Image (cartoon, rainbow, N blue to C red):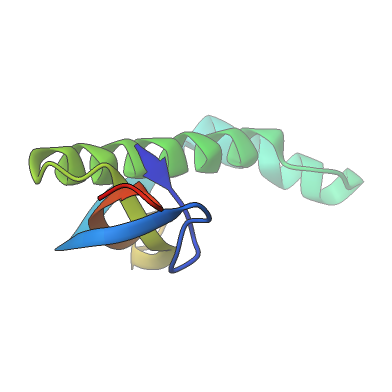
Length: 109
């Protein structure tokens, strides 16, 4: 599955637009990680625990979006965007969305 943030894919042409696809996940902070993060905030530096949690969240949301596109028989997703929102104190949603399409190589008829 080709996944891009642009509205086109070099060397490909869109032959069918299948519609909006999305994937999301909601994650809560962990008390132990919060304690480590607060300590790290005092001494400075990257908060590795949150960096890892957000990276995992992005991958999970992407996987869910790709699965939805595959159910539509898409072979690409264009115009992909990420968004976040607070659900409640200590919990956030990570959303990814794009347009599921069928593409073929330019010049193929």
